[in-house]
Image (cartoon, rainbow, N blue to C red; front, side):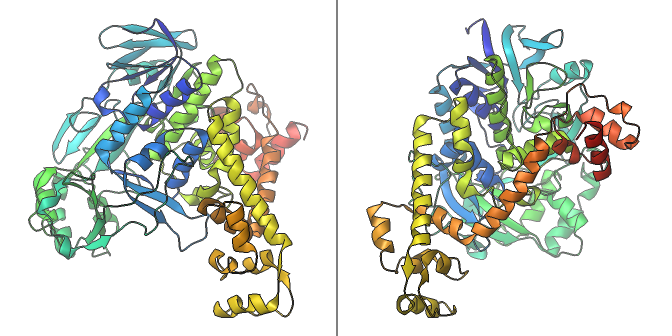
Length: 623
């Protein structure tokens, strides 16, 4: 059936579980992926898309580290958009509309092609614990499978409860049963558990919609992609999305069902995602708005099924249907299935270490929605890091932790374990203090070498990153060393409403001006020849432009990040006794005892710990 013992067992095959299994196996750990239904590996439970603001940066980081999300997204994409392109590069965020069926298929095929990885379809109902260490799992059929480490990535399946109006039934996703047994066992072991809520909109028949009444949302004219590897190519054709709006009439029809809404009648008691609220929540919270955007997103290249982004709801199905028929373009809509809300168990992530290993049980890791996050990208990045660290622990090697100044993934995990979360956590660019450093274009520069050193990123990936870095840095130096005369530069400067030059100057300095672009610089003598001779592609040219345009900002953030690193370097022993520091506030002592920060920098980010408390701590530590 399968071998007697594994290095790593991954429970659940969503985005977190799939990345965790791939990472552990690719690092040489014998790995078993256990899931309730092998047909639903990496299922897109909600919207058929990857990336977006801050989320796109995470997907690029996963790819730079050697994960699969970027590669799968590229090969199953039906549309590509670079969001926030009108802003600075720190805000640029790639996003793809995906073919839902292709996405899951490509994930499964990649996993099946991964060495050291086995699969088993069944529900894991419990853990095997010896002392304070996990040693395996138990299944609903009574099988015992031994392991040196276990990663739980249960998504919304732990005691999942689906709500549609006044109807409710157990399930982890539409048409799939909930997982039971694990929560109760973890609580008995001393873990704190909670409940969260998320929701999903109706899926409709695209043949029943009138797109002439909607606003077309095409992809980029020159689409890019997620993966840094040449294995995938940008799209040559794309499918459009569409936009429509709700109206006061739609809102009134929805309100008719509020008394039957599980959100408002007390049936749902848990907290949902603040930044992706249901349509009834939006109407209730933003009563002054007479309309809300709806994005009509195709589910794939060939299917007629459409996802109604912005209409997430748990209202009764008849109310959903009646209200949606009052939206422009939806007058004759036919439902494939109604929207629903789902409640599920999670475990406050302050119970984890930075490696995502639990503090209570040695060798047990949590990743994804079990930690209170929302989103495929947040889940995938956690799974990747848990898989890496589980494999490293089995091999008795040093843990792998990313700092806040190194990756959005570092910000995500640090936020979770330091601050915790009482509502589904979603990543935003505003959560990162060093977002000028953490751009989507340089994730490979930041992370590929680190991953290569621990044995995950391939030689091929490492060589590609080094070539890109060498070429872009050399081109920057060429621009710093090469001058251009006024008679040549002023033609470009005047055409761009920029002050003319009176004497020769370096191209780098001219290029630094805000309204001078790469295509302008390419007209200067010698520049185009340099580009052709050195075979510089668009990726290198974009990287060069960013390095020139934002050199001052980048250097400033690097200096700030260096200050943070100095505090990160002051480690706090795991057995440090905070109760002895009487001059520290009581709240700070209690929070520090609960979170057990590993560094002074982490301690400073805990809610309730003041700068004065940190000063006292530093004095007490002899600093």
